[in-house]
Amino acid sequence: MHKHTSDHTIFYERGPVGVLLIHGLAGTPVEMRDTARRLAAGGHTVLCCQLAGHCGTEEDLIATTFEDWYQSAMQGIERLEKHCSRILVGGLSMGAVLAGLVAARQPKRVHGLMMLAPTLTYDGWSIPKYSFLLRIAMQTPLGRYYRFEEREPYGLKCERARAMIAYAMKFGNSSEAGLLSTPALAVRELWRLTAALKPMLPQVKQRTLVIQSRIDDVASLKNMMTLQRKLGGLVDTMVLDDCYHVITIDHQRDLVGERCVEFANRFARQIAGEAPIAVPLRAAEKTSQAPAALPEQAGPGSRLATSGVIPAGIATAQELGMRLMSL
Image 1 (cartoon, helix red, strand yellow):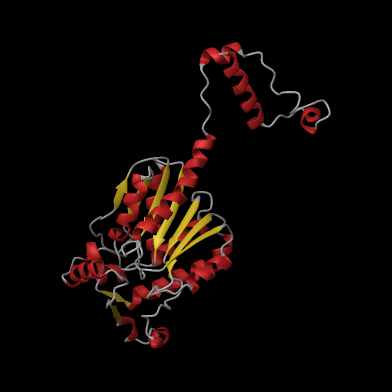
Image 2: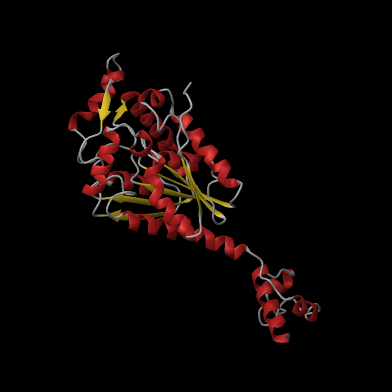
């Protein structure tokens, strides 16, 4: 049972498209703040949730499981559903994997997926070649107490951002920069999360945006390629070339934000397309006896006419045209 930590959730209430953004393992909602602000500026409602056990101590983190993190994400979705009719879920690193699991388990509630620097496998250029031994070490009593201390370059190519993150980590501000060390038990939960998602990837039919850097120091482009092959729906991709792993903070964060806004805009246009067309009352009264269809589009020999069915889109367009002509 994990204890309660201070809530550092970020929330912007805007339009009918709601975007849930999930931070990475041992990270914080601050990682997603820049992307959230850009989405909010684009008119979208955004919630950067705080996962259970995060923004506190190592003890807080290891007291949680990936199912606890999943429940944190679901609470975020429930909050967004009070304001929005379309829900998108996105995340960074481990948060991208968790977002994928949410989309797989909630196909009717999640309409789109954004996976930023997804980490199905730790195989970036900064990961030691002997890291595979950790799985073996985890089977021993001592292995469970191992910690991965964050080190240069902290997933950041931008030296200014790197210096700020390093300072915050070393001086104990875990709510801003995350933990300086990630416990092995927390990494084991990430493995379990990944194992839960992989067989479900073909079930993810929602349109998905995947963004990753080709010089990612933590997770290589093989992660993106795996998702392209195995996801069950349309997959849009973007490959960056001037940042490392934390792409929401690094040099090309503006490109990441712009692409996320473009992705969310698709769903906003869908909502706009579903809205009824407002017609002046006087025009509607004048054309109350107007025929439902024009002869050339539903003639006596056409399949539509013989069936007695006129598509709603065609009838609406014709009625609107006649109403306008009668004004």
